[in-house]
Every structure is written in C-alpha cells, then in structure tokens.
Length: 195
Image 1 (tube, rainbow, N blue to C red):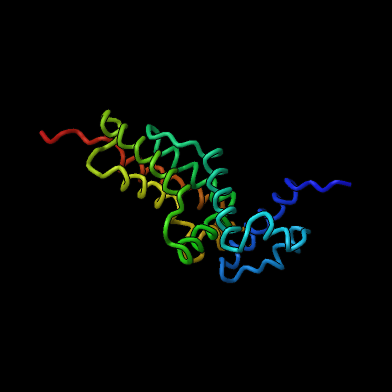
Image 2 (image 1 turned 180 degrees about the vertical axis):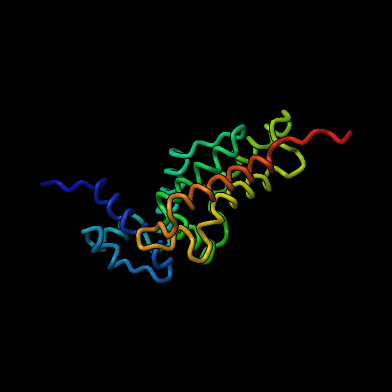
C-alpha cells in the first residue's frame, strides 16, 4: 500500500503545533512529535529540515489558516477584532504558540511581515479616505487591534488557562469580547475636527 505523504505531513504539522504550543521550540521533542503523528521521526527531517524549520512550517500554516478564517477588512476593524478573539477562544493553544514564538524568535518572518504590510496598507487607505481615525499611525492601529484582541489570553487565569483552554465562563468571555470590540471601535472611529 502506497503511503500518503500529504496525510503524513498534515499529521506531523498537527502534532508539532501541539508540541510547540505546549513546550516552545527549545522544549519540543521531535520524538514526541513523531510518536503523536504516528510517523517515522526521520520524516520530520526529510519533509521539514530541522526543528526550527518545522516550527516555521507550523507558524506558516497557522498564518495561512488565520488568513482564510479571519478575512481582514480595514472598514470593519471592530468586527475583525471580535473574530480574532473568537478564533483564539476556539484555539487557545494558538496564543501559546504565538507567545513562544515571541519569546524564542522575536523577529518577524517574511510571511508575517508580508501579512502585516498588506493590512497596514489597507488601514492607511481607509485613513486617507476618512473611514478610520488618522491620528494614529496605520501600523500602530493594527498593533492596537491585534493587541486588544489577544490581551485577555495572556492574563493570569485568563481564558486559555483551563484544561480545555476555557478558563472563563461563556458570559465572562462575551463581556471581554464586547470590551475588545468597543475599544477598537473607539480607537478607529474618525473624530470630528475641533470646532
């Protein structure tokens, strides 16, 4: 029976995602990744190179998935912030992966830089058209939107703290989501000129 390399690659990336989210790059073990994926450890090196390159592949996949399920609309930054919040509620291990990436590899990858550049350009265009407050630099607007969306997940005892990733009740999550959306609305709504 022929092996399905795409299925093996997908299992390796899924297992690596969980491993890196739990242990970071330094603490992750390729033996555990291979065992969880029910694959030969050698295939990790064949398909992805070293552990750092595997981490890059996992991060790239997470970025691509995020772009697919979280379309960016500069004209609805509150809606985007709410969608990011919801995505993190559904996948709290993603925030842990992001935190490990920031701790162990603080620079941005080419894919990250490209993703942010497109969003920053869209924010700038919306500011120039008067649809977003132009009093904050476009890159700072994007940073605030993403930062507000992620803030609750880094809190001690926050929503990612529970065994199932939901340390807070649904009502509390809804309240925090509403606060994120309202904060982004206030930051991005154009202000009338001083009279």
